[in-house]
Length: 138
Image 1 (cartoon, rainbow, N blue to C red):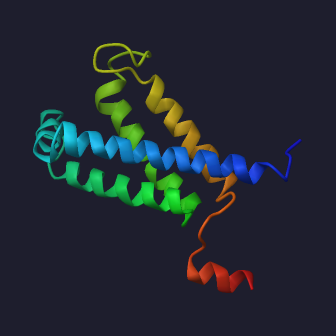
Image 2 (image 1 turned 60 degrees about the vertical axis):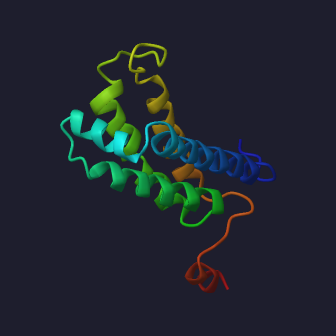
């Protein structure tokens, strides 16, 4: 049975943590690997190098939407292709455990599941609502 008093706070915690994790992931691409290094890495995988910039912007938009609670379900679903792509290109061939060389698919798979759960749960507590959604609720 779902406790309707505490479930919104569980969704809030999940939403914030997913958003923060995506911000950390973006930070890795920008501050550690650098944008140029990320572009080169995407190219080395056979992906279009410009996809690195699209991915960084996509992750940023999704992270902010999750943290703020704007279009949470859409943001969570829209972010699922990022870890799916990571599994398909880098982490899948490395095996299951994330401690393997090149990291395994263990963590990205959990990230996919967590994003799907967030999409099913919705915004949770303390979410900002888009202006159109506020009018619809009134």
